[in-house]
Image 1 (spheres, rainbow, N blue to C red):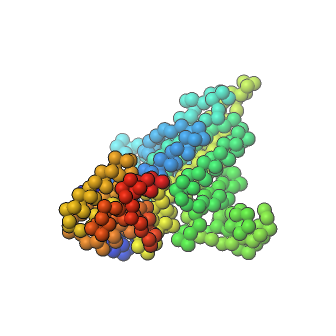
Image 2: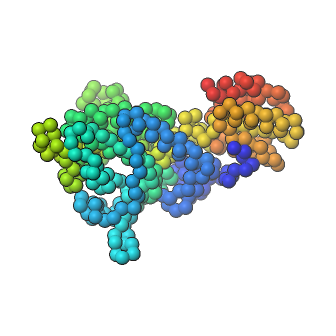
Image 3: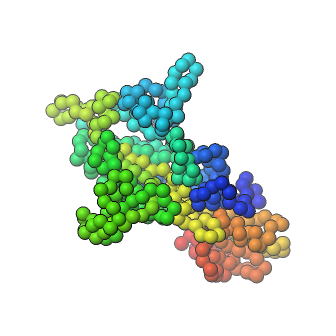
Amino acid sequence: MRQSQMFTKTDREPPADEPSINARLLQQAGYTDKLAAGIYTYLPLGLRVLQRIQQIVREEMLSVGAQELLMPALHPREPWATTGRWQDPGPAVMFQFEAHGGQAYGLGWTHEEIITPLARRFIHSYRDLPVAVFQIQDKFRNEPRAKSGLLRGREFSMKDMYSFHRDAADLDEFYQRAISAYRRVFERCAISAVLTEASGGAFAKYSHEFQVVTPYGEDIIFRCCGCGYAQNREVSQYAAGDPCPKCEKTFVEEKAIEVGNIFRLGTRFSDAFHLTYLDERGQTVPVVMGCYGIGPSRVMGAIAEIHHDEHGLRWPSSVAPFDVHLVALGKDQAVMDRAEAVYQKLTDSGVAALYDDRQGTTAGEKFHDADLLGIPWRAVVSAKSGMAVELKARGSKTAELLPLDKLVAKIRA
């Protein structure tokens, strides 16, 4: 992509009304645009990052045998009334309204009420189990505190997966596989997520959250400094300094960002919708369910909160919008011709390059924008570099001059 033709531009200063780091940097760099509190447009660069995160999530869900589908975001009242969640939590969480003809609808903030009756069409026998399905879709939540950029939205990207099982033992086996898949997702996104016990609510004693420890987090967890066992403060019977029940080291209090959660639902929703199967003896048995959520938009915000410095963003290569930021310096036609040749070579070699071909922009402005955008590599073509290209990793203080063939190999490696 040529920077001179980009739809967006960077801003000189971050938005003054945004306290969170991810909101300030993503808007200043032209990745997102704030329409209202908790409601963001993903601009071309931001959409590329979001889609790369979504693809990582998709690949790992497929790796555990889940199948992808897409359910409606607009829901009639009736399935939610069946479980009692139209009224409780009701409008406190769900956007609800009346359509023409007086029919009540809501915007989905989760999909248990939709997937469970859908599963009744296809699950009849023990031979149909286990099975898992997932979707990646925008969700809507009547969030009263939409103030942390992508971390607390009223509209947000969510991967929600639902699994269906014969019994609790079968659910537990898949639950552990889901935990492993979640760990791989976060490792690939270059964030370290702590498996944290949280309240299971009406479903189980504990659910599990994946918390990214950072001074910028809104959640509080207690984590053992020895074995890493962790609990969310809202459910924990421990406090900082208490001994860990697993290894007798002590708990420390840490701020964190929740990027995923998983629940053993049991038969809460299958009972409500009469989702059953016939076992080998011909007995009718309720289906046991689990649900598993990851917020790709929240992951994007968490990455921005963690991977940045005083100059701007520092995207991990796995989610960056481009592999390399190619910068042409000077007005010399020979330099521009060499930069064009480098851009063509990168493109032909399958290296995604953002090419800063802007005219009338100073070297300082181009370097400022390159740091702010945070693409992993910066490649500079100038009179000083001669026939070589100056390559520098984002965040590094040193650069090296490389011939074109070695440039491609270095970036691809």
